[in-house]
Length: 123
Image (cartoon, rainbow, N blue to C red; front, side, top):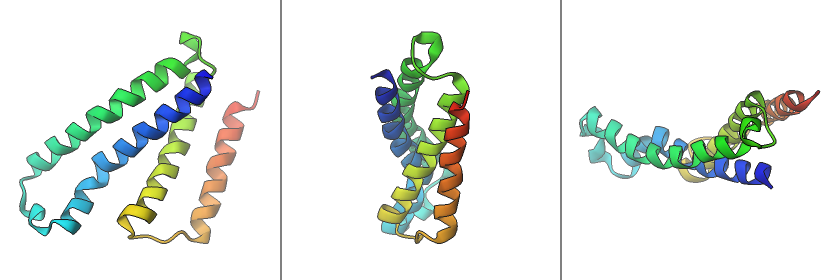
């Protein structure tokens, strides 16, 4: 059950992370005047969103880590996080930003990510 909680928390965390990092680009698209906002304001807004990311990422790592009785070692946690991050990012870019299309090379790269997760768990 800890493994499932860890992955769900990582998914939520990565939704916030994607918007913290790339949300300002969508903001510039829907609110063109924001392109003229000072960079420090954009950074502070991103930090505000990133606070929520950390509010889910830290518990995910604490719950999932073997050192705290979770099912994953640190390497496995990182590989899972990267796979979740790229998957969430791709879904958001395709559905929210609508600036990219899913192509064969993307699908192949996802296959390699899945293989990376597989090999990270291989004993």
